[in-house]
Amino acid sequence: MNFVDGGGLKLQMKIGKINLDCASAPEPDAGTIECMAYLQLAAIERGGDLSIENASPALCELIELCGLSETLRVEVQRQPE
Image (cartoon, rainbow, N blue to C red; front, side, top):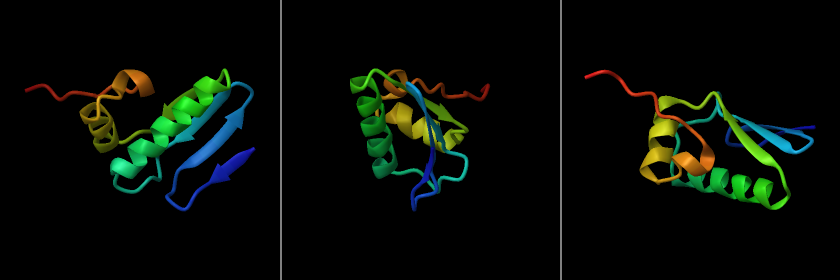
């Protein structure tokens, strides 16, 4: 079952797993992060798992800034200095 919201995020639901494809998402903001956190919470409450795919560097950095890197299991790719 596939769902697409107006923000460009594509959800694909499988048994026990939700894949969130962020490839076509616009510039991330606090609302994007809030939505992702609620999806993770809903998945956990129902015994499932949220997998974030194709997250842009800007989205990963915003997730880290909000302190949700471990919760949303997103790694920020750092550039060597």
